[in-house]
Image 1: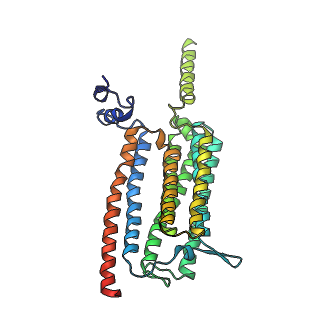
Image 2: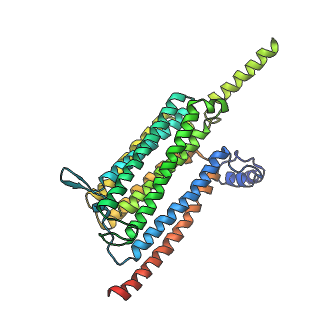
Length: 229
Length: 125
């Protein structure tokens, strides 16, 4: 009978590997989750491939160049009181993004508890942290372009590919953060006006959270491969 | 009169159903787990920053950076994005396709090294 479960089993009821077969062969909805969540996951999967292509091409140019690669530890150092502290701004940006991921996780939780005020406040806090992240990135870009002379086609510190890889990868990520801030603001407004109470479901807040956590997730990889490498 | 009461009770019942059941309402978990993961993400971020701050080099640096990166990514996907509590079918659909990227990374690494050797031979040597 256990074998039959994969053939006769209803999607969403059988567990383990048999459950995979039952869900895929159920001849109806494969994923027993709200369609918005399934679609967001599939979008994030495609986004994973985009960012991976950027990071892989960065790896490729970094391996293939015969010029020395500028030392990110020095390029992104911040001078505070006469001391060069390596990667300080990047460390702060990382912490800000993690904090925003935390507030977002709590927002999703309070959404399911139907706490409108807390959900709105936490989503707006998340958006504000995202905005400050973009602000710090603008500062970093300005510093690199104006003071360090980094251009997409070259820089005074070494391999010419440094600039194009940096602007492409962090720019695309910053674009995602900016879009996320707008997305968060729109959904937070809907939470506040009681849209999801009328709809009877706060799943949209969780779907928004998926997007936001993904932005944090991508930063984890950029931080490791671009800044620490 | 009777009709109104009946429909009111039905309405109340429906409201109770949607508000009461954790799983009917999607992903609901104790707040504590989020705070824990939040703290761990801070700790591991600090660790990976320390790798750079203390200027560790060579194999130790790469092992630590990749390790902390994977731990952080795992925590975000599993807990914050609730993947841990999703059905296996969704887990497979989302987590297996990115493995194809390992092939791309491997091929591009080989190609990059080939280009490096060619350039080195032609321009540097």
